Length: 74
Image (cartoon, rainbow, N blue to C red):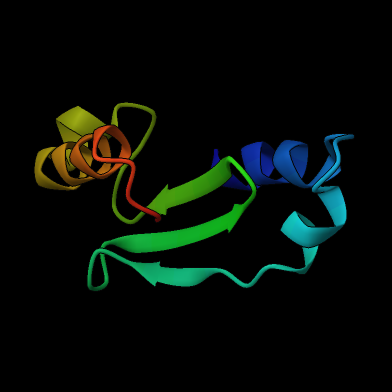
């Protein structure tokens, strides 16, 4: 579940912990989900998807992979 994974991401000890915790969740993909980024860590919540985002939301999954491979910010 995204709530547990987000709690882990927020609780990680690293140099950008405070910046990541203070960052706002922003719209991602024109309403496809939410993204939060600090440093090299991005947390993406894809709406209407379970553990298998590519199966539940294939277009969103492809957008996420394309953005990552292009080095674009979420």
